[in-house]
Image (tube, rainbow, N blue to C red):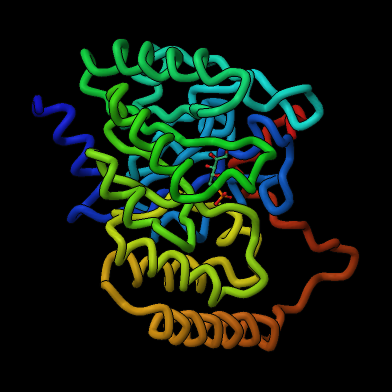
Length: 299
Ligand code: 5RP
């Protein structure tokens, strides 16, 4: 592996483990709940991530240019929730653009078993052909569109292996209750776990991430179960502890509870703090220092 590729991989996966924060959902879902203003959503989470997974539009409009964490650029798309088939994706962002944006990796979806299986596998292989000469790793996403019931070990093992065979350096796939170790064992490159729709409890998230890590995953690429949770910082701290400190799901729950208590205490202290006197006639201004509030409304 050349130095550039090795350096990018080492920054993305420090110590062999990773928490990738996924905020790419808008590329086919539009303004997803809690991601309407991505800059505000991610600001408190950035210190805890290893990399950010997003599109070029969100990167440019909502992510500070001072970001020190690596970026994985979502480069596939071309479909929407209202369209006929979510699998009908193409590569929408060039490798040249990824380089201009200082991306550390690129990511795209492959829809194995769909009507667009061939096209999306070829999208992946072409992207690998174009990215590798620049030392840029490709993360393949084994996507199922609306067919969430497809996510069993047999299907996921097939999909992840095909992505690795095409040259993906990392494969993102779903966790499954039965046989996830077979998915990881059959994939010759590192596997990261996707989050999926929001779970009912935080403990469920800790359990599946912990189980997936024990069965060989190197980390997660997870979004909604963190930023749609009422305590996103406590969630990400607990998940980080599972990934980087090998804590169990029960211990992660403790990390979560104490971070939540701290967050609540800090919020209460802020509310209870005496307010400075306001001169008559002055109207309090809403907080407006938002990097994702461009002059023209784009969200
Ligand atoms: C959407 C994606 C997301 O990155 C992935 O699904 C992770 O996000 P979440 O944890 O919210 O499912 O690839 O196509």
